[in-house]
Length: 258
Image (cartoon, rainbow, N blue to C red):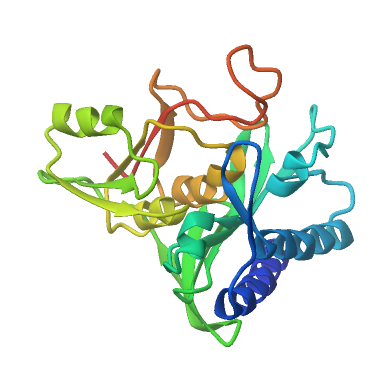
């Protein structure tokens, strides 16, 4: 399965880069978030690949959900797809945007692929192993490298959202005595924790499950964790929430090894 997901993410990334270089067409959803022709094209590629290879596994994809098309996932394993995470980065021609495909089983992210086409980096994880590779000409270049979280030292490095930081995040870092932080876009924050270049990612602003699933799968396989502010492992497949929409995440804290 993982090789198929990797190949699909790479194909979607190639389509994204074609539009990135030509200049995207941008529209806005009801929540005022941007969406581009690259989002739609990449999602069509991934959906076609998943339907061909795994016809019995439902797919929850960002733009499909926005159009009101949500499959039945009750009691099933399912895919979560964000074809272009970091659309604001993409529109502003920053390189921190990613393709994300995650597999959920029993509410947990167990397999994931995150591809950053403008950076030429792909991360993936399955069966408790996380890895990364450089990408050249749409294919992994050289050997995959196994990655793992580092143990947090006396001076932890935090990652924050470039566009969705919040006063609560700033207060958390102050309360924890964390002085070093870097703003990073998209799901790359999970991958940086997973490869051991940072220690903690507090997210005290809105995210959706497709934003986090693939990166979270990679982080967990690398030895890290994602917990809600109540200290509970972040769950997936959240429907009929009394205080939020389907698939919306609560605030959470992702971290490497303690």
